[in-house]
Amino acid sequence: MTIDAEHSEQIISLYGGSTPVRSRWTYRAHEPFTVAAAFQTDKDRWVEWIFGRDLLVDGLSGPAGEGDVRLSPDVVDGHAVLVLEIESPDGHALLEMDYEAVQNFLATTAAMVPLGTESDYFDIDALIEEITNV
Image (cartoon, rainbow, N blue to C red; front, side):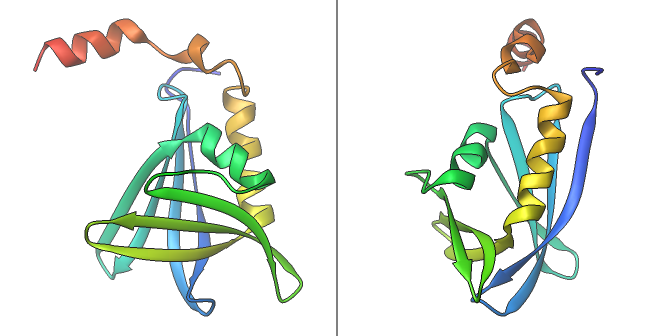
């Protein structure tokens, strides 16, 4: 797998249990520790959250997260979901996502960069150069 490999897919989330929200999940091999989730709030406006891939892994098996992003598996109307709670000074949202869709996304990221090998794909020298060339 090349370091510039990237995977994105859309997952429809439910807000308030009924309102669909389109989300775009992205994983980049050159940023192996993080996942980006962008949520469409208006026709042309997206709000992006970046958090640790390990948080997503942990959230699939039980409640995870203590900060602005929290995840937990649940069953709603007999359907497995992953509940994502995000909070900022601008507001709070509780979204339900199809558990299997999130699990499939995570499996694709693990095929790109196996879990536990992220540091092998992380270019610390490039990060230092980016920080010092500001």
